[in-house]
Length: 77
View 1 (cartoon, rainbow, N blue to C red):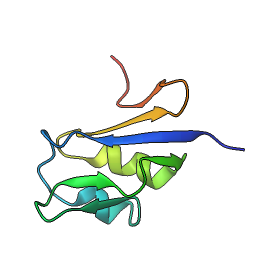
View 2: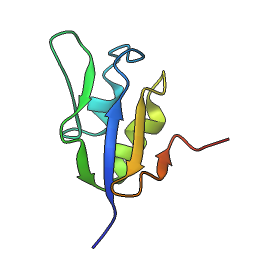
View 3: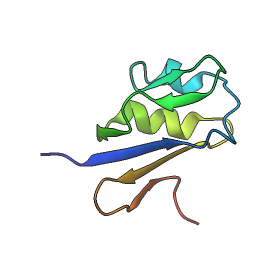
């Protein structure tokens, strides 16, 4: 069984570019205010979701391992 991720979008940072929705269809959605949110905050580790986090122009997406809370993205300095 693979890793499970907890995905969050910081709505105070999100600018609604929609890049995450384009990169990971089904992984993210924009609400009526054009703010992104994960389609499912608890998901299987997924390359497309990671690509979406990496491609977010304002780094509003955080991914942690479910259970341990270990940071997957963004990388710590």
